[in-house]
Length: 233
Image (cartoon, rainbow, N blue to C red; front, top):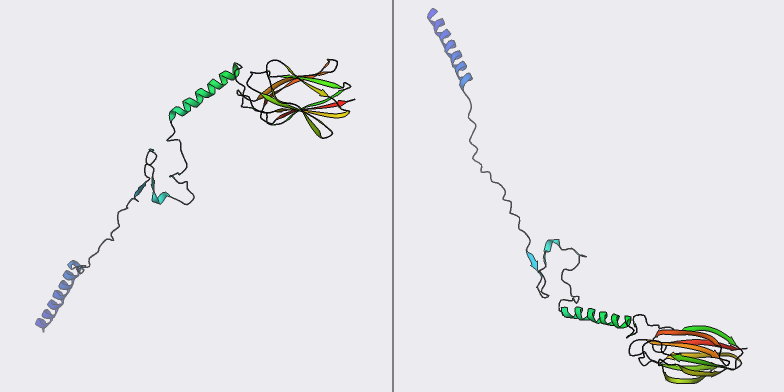
């Protein structure tokens, strides 16, 4: 009996030792992961191609990227005419011509055409009891072939007093016989002189030789008139 109990106690002792030994040192090994993991490939960025405009005007090449072009942006290629083919000497020539023209004007050898008078000039109303008037005219600038036409108008009827009258440095006389009421006188520039606009000076005298009016017209274009109104009282 004692032997049987001893055997049973030894079995419990061995069993308890075995459980303690395995529970403290044994560790489970996880199964090996055999699945293959791959990274997704990211393509490298590619720069957009450059578009080069043809060098047709001998200018630096114009480059632009197609991705930067937007509707409404200015076109880098212009079809507007440029000055690339103009002779550089033309600018120097034009400048010299302007300087020469300015010098001639300043020295009285040429009339200034930069401010031609394109409108008729009215010299107002003159009242007189004289039966006739004398208008003395001349060119007050350089003598360059200025021509005028003198016309008197009464009751809507015009009478030419002088045609193609050549203006010189000396005075030329135009006589007017006044009618009762309104008398209109027109001095019309028939041309522009060879040196510029039509220029002239005038003096108006009554029959007794009294000076009624004196003045001048300056740089008239062809067809422009000096207008006068005479009232015989």
